[in-house]
Length: 362
Ligand SMILES: [Zn+2]
Image 1 (cartoon, rainbow, N blue to C red):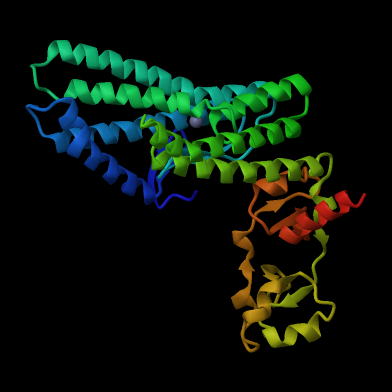
Image 2: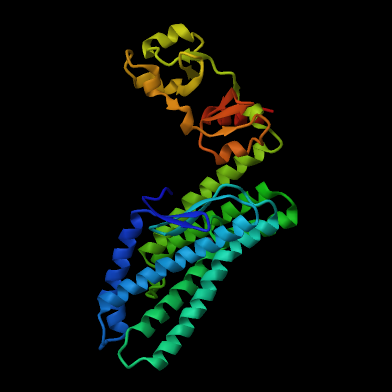
């Protein structure tokens, strides 16, 4: 989830919002001001719209606090954090590294819901205090009470036991500590996430059939997101399992052929007749400048310069050949394998797929 707008940094962690947050913000403000607040307090002294805007802003700040708690504990445990994005269905903290041990996995996972529980309790306390202190008809105690409830619901919801929810990470940590196998723990918890996700997708139907209204179309949307994300996590964990004990050098296509970057697409077949996947484009001095992914050439005009359809090297991640193969998963692909300042290989999506094939056929 890439942010549309970057707000700044907190403790070195980049905070951003995705445009979809505006959509959910507008919907929340209109439902609070249009029905929930007037229902709870029919003859209020203040503006429902102003109260709703304050409530929603504080709610988003609460989600940010939840994600910051995950991120700060991760940093404390030695994991790199790329940033936090707030979006349609809440917040996402993007961690660059995996937890080093089951204890780290548990601490990072639990920090978010714990923060939400504490915030929920604090808002409920604030609601009671404001109710006693302010005149009859003030909307602030109602807003504080609503924030208390949504934070507690947020904490409880996130503790559902299936990845990618926080409860799923707790489950991963528990199975990992018990069986000693991180990947199997991740696969089990991702499968649990698929069950949790489908139950959430079905929840509005059950709510409608029983007339209890405990779930809405949002629950189903979150459920669908959980199903998709847990499937991706299962795939990632299985892939990571097959890379265990291998290095980037085991995956890479070594020494891609070099071609001058002013060559034309139409000349390439003559320059590199064995149709390599990757070609390194070099300038007049022989310095590598860009990487050409030859499968992408099919639609390029034959008289285009190869450098115009290639990826500049500055945009690619690099890894040393002896780095663990798993590191390739957490970087964008393709990536360059660089030893002592020299490009010695390339890892792309195809190399990863090949590595799967070679494992399966073994
Ligand atoms: Zn969380």
